Image (cartoon, rainbow, N blue to C red; front, side, top):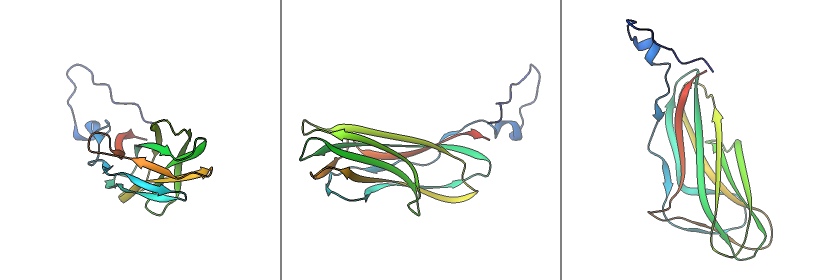
Length: 152
């Protein structure tokens, strides 16, 4: 990663220097606000998709989160971040119990080519015999978010 430009007293702030700084969120997060049940194979998490225009040479942190429960204790739940073509970028797994919901979070840093890019969340039961539910609501959505973390 290129070092942030440190400004000296009296130095003029230029657009080129300022453009090297991270700018944070690049688009509204993709949020799932309704439960998604009957998960036994790999499925897209409904509405947990984000598309934005990437800048060449910039790094982006993609983060995702979901609350999972199962009908059987010991199921292995997976939350995966993929690109729009379902290429796996990061996966987080958790052994789920039947006692309430458990949170799975996942994060990955990417440096995509310039242009429109899409990232999304996918959920699956990796192993076990139960049926998973991704629990989501307006106050606790499952989400995927992208942040600009600066130039390479």
